[in-house]
Length: 436
Image (cartoon, rainbow, N blue to C red; front, top):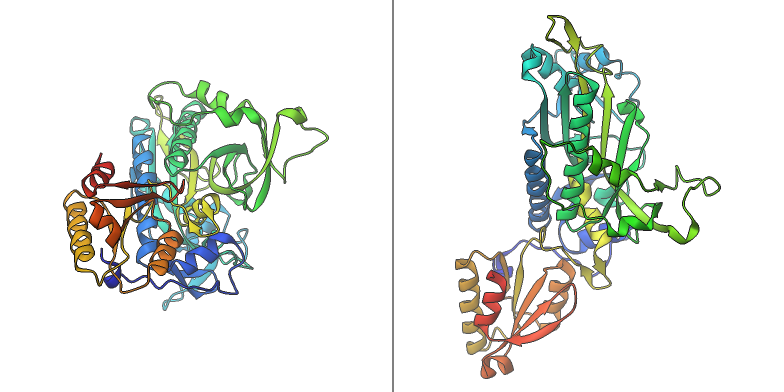
């Protein structure tokens, strides 16, 4: 993509309403624009990152056995009355009446909707276990939306739901999602720590939230130093017993400031690390909480009708964009992990009026495209400083700078955004490094 043709409305100044790093940088980098309080339009650069995160989430969900579906954003209120949550959920739920006076709502979550799908279509224990997931927009009418996409009213979420015959099976499903979440966040370039959590309005008796570490995180976290050495990307066989792995990850102390009690903490001060973190995922096992009142039953081996055991699992996909920025930035801008970067490399022609520079930049740009490298070519008639500032702000992992001196010597400058390292390479060597 040529930057001269790309819709990238960057800002030099930080908007006054932006209180945290990710909000400031997403606005300045032209990733989003606010439509109304807590609701954002996603512009090309932001949407590319969002879609890359979504793709990784999908891959790990399906590797763990979840199947994709898509449910509506608007749900009938009657489903929520069946579960007993319609009146309990409170003012965060956006309630709607259609032209026929039917009560509807904009779904803040989908336990009722998925339970209705299940009970209409599944009859026998032979059809279990079953795990269905979607990535869909949600709405919660936050009393004070703030911090950009980190605490918006409309947000993109991955939510999935497991159905099992008994608690043993439900725990297997829960464990699979536990592992899938660790792998997902690691692939996104984040270090996540699972922490025992309250179940809140979702309900149930087993829950973990996944906190990614970031110096500018929203809450203080406390965890055993051993977590620093845990590797979430070990090979996993989802058909095997995952409980030993779960035991490994839950055997060390970890708590947010809401649950941490310094006087009762079982970890010696020398082994306790204090940091800040951001919640990006939450998983729940809640047994019959929805299946019993909504009559989601199957016939068991003895011919009896039995309510299924359920779990639900959420990842804030749009929230992850902000979380990654909070965890990976500097005073110049964003530093994207390679896995979610909107482009792999930015080609900067610092002298577009020089025929030799223009020819070399055009040639390298075409070769990168042919090689399948996602490249942003800054061909604008701008001063070199402005081009460097844009590249650093939007956080592309690699830059190739082309100028008159280098062209005469047959080299380009290859820079790495994260480390700041720079070296001179031939154009062929730079191309090979990006395609290796």
